[in-house]
Image (cartoon, rainbow over all chains, first blue to last red; front, side, top):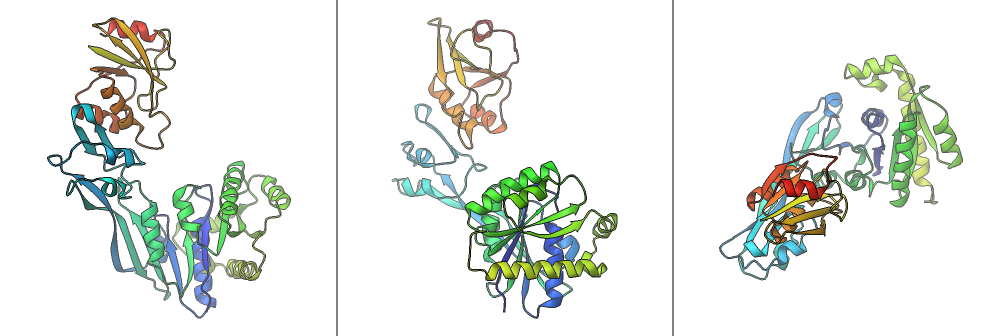
Length: 295
Length: 104
C-alpha cells in the first residue's frame, strides 16, 4: 500500500496543474489496487470536479474564532490592539475608540490571551469555507476545499482540507497557483512536488520562484513541461544547468486542448498519454525511494 | 483646525503622495498656530491593515480634515467611524503647503 502525498504545483497559473493532477489520478486509479484520493487545494477556485463529476457525500465548515469586544466593560488599555500582528483592532485611546476589523483578523486569539479584564473579549465563529468530499464514478474520492466569497484567508481552509484526507491512502494534491502562503501550506508536508510549467519566459520565471520555494521547504521535486513545442529552449537549458529532473513533457497539441475543453479525461481518450502518466509515476516512485534528499 | 495631506517628502515643497494608507509622510497645517508639521506614516510598511493603522495615527495627531487622492475601503470606514472629514483631492503640480493653505 502506497501512502505518498504527491502535490502538483506551479508558480504560474494556467500551466496545467489540474490537468496533471486529474490525469495522474485516473492513471493510478486504473493501475493501482488501493485507495487513492484526489485533493483540490486550489480553494479560491476549485475546479477538479468539473472533470471528475463526483457526487457530494459530505461537507464540513471551516471556521476561525474572531473577537467580539464588549465596549461597556472594556477599560481601553490597548493591550489587545498592541498584540494584534494583523492590525485587526482599531484603537485610539484619546477618543476611547475600539473596533474589530473582521476582514483583517486571522483568528490567532492573541487579543483574548492578553486581555486582563474578565468577559471583555468573547470569541465567535467566522466561516471561512468548506471541505467537501465527493465520491467519484471511477471509485475514487475527491476532497475539495472551497473558500467563502469575500474571504481572503485561504490557509486555514487548505489546512483543514489536508487534514480531512485519509493518511492511509495515496494522495494527489492540486495546489493553488503562485508561491505564497497557500501554496506553502499545500506542499509543506508533501513527499513529492510535481512542478508544472510551460516553455515560455513567464513559465520559466515563475518556475524559478517555485523551485526556490520547494528547495527552502526541503521537498523532493521534478518538473513537467506542458505545451512542449511552444516558446523557446531556455527552460530546458535551465533544468540541465540546475540538474533538475524533467519528469514528463505534454505536447502543445490542439487535440489535447479539445478533449480538455469538453471536460473529458485525456488518459481515457489517448493511450499514449496514459503511458506517459504511468511512466511519470514510475519516475516519482524512483525519486521517492532514493535516500538522497538533495534534489 | 488641523488639516492633513499625504506627502511624498518631509517638507513644505513636497508634492502630495496619492495614497493614504501607505503614503510616506503626513503634512499637517494648524490654522490656529499657523504652523506646519511633518510626520512619518508609521503604517507605511505594514504587512496588512495599513489604512486603519494610518487612520489611528491621524486621529492621534489631532487632525480634523484629511486630504488624499485615494482612500482604501478599510481606511475610509475607519476614518468615518472616528469622525475624520475626508477630501478626495488630486494635484501633481502644487506643493503640499499651497494645497493645505487653500483647504484650511
